[in-house]
Image 1 (cartoon, each protein chain N blue to C red):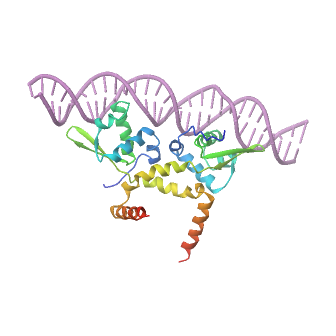
Image 2: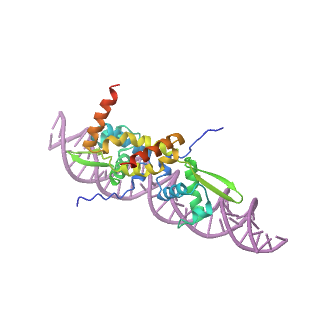
Image 3: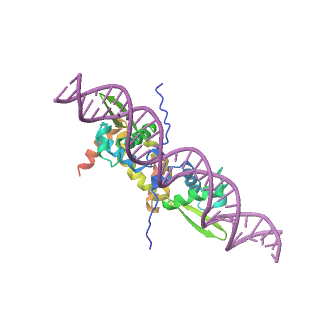
Length: 112
Length: 112
DNA sequence: ATGATAAGACACCAATAGGTGTCCCATATG
DNA sequence: CATATGGGACACCTATTGGTGTCTTATCAT
């Protein structure tokens, strides 16, 4: 069973600012134990742990036990889904000039 | 007061699947009245209206009254924030090969 | 003028989210 | 061995979320 079964929606996982801060924290250190992570927040260990569980459910972090501590590591891959989703909307927010440019480029790309 | 004051977090706004579907719907038609939007969902008008309010609070849609109907339109710009946020994490999910490529490209870009 | 319809404004409800505190166990440490 | 520490597992609480239904007003069509 090497299946990834993300119980939790990745959009949901990143909706909370605390969880985004968690991801950022984990992006800077490659692995961090829970107690050390907790130091960076103004809430109890239990709350932080819950947030990490949610991130884990979305496949955004993994954890492993080392001695008595549980160390967490970032897994950024699921964020690709959001990037793909966003790609569809890019054409709506780019300026008209930039959009013209993009459309022209698409024309050129079609001439193969 | 031409200020945009997004009361609502854009991450929060897109966390709900119904709201993402709403954005998609509005991306295809340039303007839609509430009753017509409601036809695409299996929930009451009130619920749809609430979701649209949330999107409006995040600056992702605007509405205008035309006769007795309220028409909604997509405003994709706030999604840029998410794209910017994602950019930081790209380096973590791209393959090592792709990463090497990107780093090399960055080198080239620096030689201006 | 009379209906029918679009939608705002509530009040209401159940489920979930985000936090807390406590208890317990396993593992380090003096 | 004794004790401090990291963290899992609950139970618990409150605010928010995502939905409902009803009432009312404005507008459009006959």
